[in-house]
Image (tube, rainbow, N blue to C red; front, side):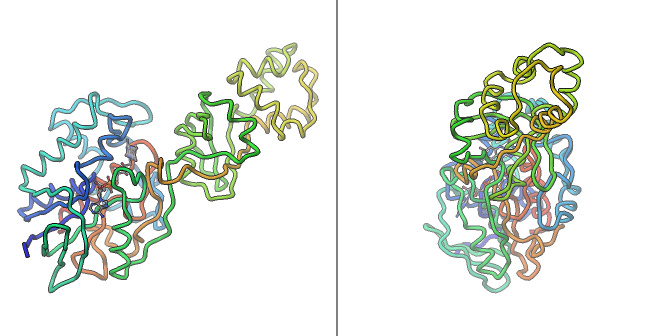
Length: 395
Ligand code: FDA
């Protein structure tokens, strides 16, 4: 049985960062992944340019049953630390919007950077390693794979969540947590497009390709000002992906298509314009046509007429429809297209400073396998870097 100081399962963002940091401390590190390539999610992230962090990282941008948990790791290894690493490797990057940082060239730059850091730190990487079992032994662990048997002092689970099974996602991390008696919170797809209920398909399916800026609001009152995109399968775009993480089955989402007061302003500016004509200047015309055929509009029994003819009650009803347009999704596209997995290893089981399991010495969980999910925009990678770095100082 070959012996290592540290074995890390999962060669994604968190595992690579942890491996490099532990290696730098002189630990003999073995990184195992069942895939053919390292960092596959990084490569396909951010449309191939990897949105690797965000200027505005803050704990409130993370969903977690214990919102305080993320503070320590995010403060110990910040976005500025990761930006400094990117700059040290001469990788060109730019801010796209809302503080989101992307590579100018390719996401492969980030993978190459992490692999180089691992190489310089003496980390051994073994791909196509299928873990058959993990057992506690003496002061550490035995890890049996399809081709080797290893022992280690510290075991780090960095195997990610369930999203995108096609590129290697597995339930491995949750199974290990349960094997060692740690609580795993229910998982569900996050940052994921919504599908439509049959009743909405008739009016909205034809809008595929239409996109507009909106404010999406969950039933719990969380709001995101981003764009909404209608697709052949339902609705997507950053506004929908963001709000999907705050959505529970059966709930509705409100979309502010136009801010309250815009119609009142329109009435004073264009009193003789008909509502449909005026709306066609404010919103995509195909959307306006579709809105007029939907139940929530026809039920108001308000007709299309020059703006000056609307009475206050009608104006209030139209303003409400436009500023809080309700849509009850049929569901989500699920793990097949989700960017992240909500839920996972309960943070109450882990040290927020080191990520070590409180009741299983030398067993660590980092990255997406943990019940921490960030907003869209580089937050999830920053969590992976911060958690991976923190564990890397301790293993
Ligand atoms: P990650 O999933 O990256 O790595 C886990 C690794 O473990 C994989 O290499 C897998 O092969 C391996 N593994 C799994 N099971 C195993 C087993 N049983 N045995 C051995 N190995 C196993 N975030 C962001 O901040 N900015 C962005 O631009 C994007 N873009 C993006 C696009 C797409 C399409 C997706 C799906 C996701 C994103 N994300 C993102 C989210 C981001 O990719 C994600 O949060 C991190 O990759 C999580 O890092 P981890 O290291 O925890 O898991």
